[in-house]
Image (cartoon, rainbow, N blue to C red; front, side):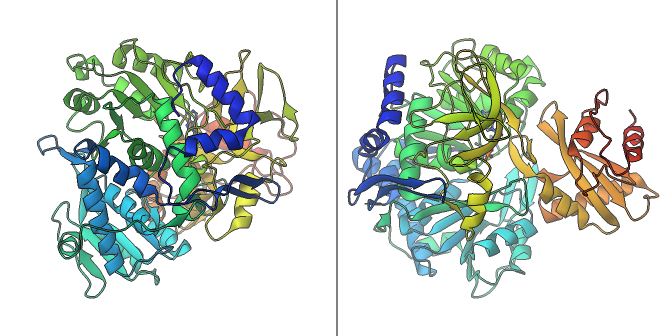
Length: 630
Ligand code: WTA
């Protein structure tokens, strides 16, 4: 399944379009199946339904663990680098990982978990997190990993949406020099969750925690009393593997559902080809497993490919801004995959943090999560890659399960800030606002995909209609990504950013509606409107316009209070960077907020506001501009 040349890419791409079933059947053969599939693909984008490898039976952990434990038991699967560099790194070989996953799967079983049950995982980046994820997969339990930075309220919403039966967490977490209470946050969440029967707590910080009799158990105690053998549950290719919540332009976050067969095939295929992973390479993805990048490219893809995957607990700036480079030096990392926000931030600290580090092991660099600006691209290329490591700028989404548009390292010619070409199996189209396909090169449009790939979102948990409405109704017969895109003269793709009301803050998707809901919960707040604005480090920042019952007498204090509310309702990542108090919002006569104007003010560019004559009260625009100090 490994493409080695541009000619092979062209050939694979052509075959994947002309004979998708034959193409993917060929790739899928290289995995462990308990029973072969009967039909490779059935699909309908109008009344959305997709089935890949119909009738096939498997357990993804057999491809990720058992087969490698049998052939190369002592090869590292995961190398774990702790937050504190004085603490020892831990290596889990394939045979040890299989043992620990099986053991923990037995713990879950003992605590009442059976195939199809939902399990919420709220943990820091420690090996137990990867073990918990894989243990769920072993039993066929559906994991829902919630990023460790979310608030109790956000956890509770996610637990309730999918009625999780068990929560797995830790006593506390360490990130940089911060101590973060994990169990306490879960306890707060569980006050409003009735579905949860058990909480399994792994020890990380020895922070005192309250353990509720009959509900809470310690990970370390539980694993002592179970066997290290656990048969892998037989799953249908289309049984759900996991739920991962992500923000959209409207309402509450939705639970994106991925299934076992197609996800396994696509995550692994893209991992091997995009990064050109060779056996023995050390691969380091800096994402958190709480996001899709961690699911597909720390856990499932690399492990199914039998790779050595580095997992890092801490932050790039602790103990100093050289930490990533130290890790590359220490573990002789060959392939490094990170986000533009991290690159921009580290770039700012200057060369003293990397000039004496040995980065010569590096072969391939990757970028994900947001558009990478040219300045960051060149710094990454020159200073980190020393001009000899191709940068794979990988465009994809939680919903796509795997990388969609990206160079293949050393195969595709790269251009700064271009995600370049679609992977085999991916058929991108650009459409105008009326839904007409824009053909030819040198064009811009809304990015859609017109043919299914194996790891396409199957549904949004508990609400299939929402999945249809969000992704398959904007443009008939196509999956709509929510991104704007340019196709240049050579057919290369450049993602230009979201065209909907989603803000990409440091590579994290945040819905404007979600932030507005949180702001509106603050006492005294009557109404709010949130937009994104360009931010040097984060890519985009959050700008909030807020109407209060009365203008705050101490605006700075009120701002702090409001930020506290947002942290409580969603989490610190959703805190606005800028708050402006206003007495009115620019609304059309039909009551719609004209966000275009708010975006312009937030960008500090009010030279061309466009037509504002349709506003109910054009006067508010002047007030907002003045209030912004422009
Ligand atoms: C953005 C992250 C430009 C895009 C894997 C997408 C990118 C959203 C890139 C998905 C890239 C991701 N260049 N933009 N290489 N990668 N994006 O679901 O707007 O957290 O729709 O998945 O991030 O974010 P998500």
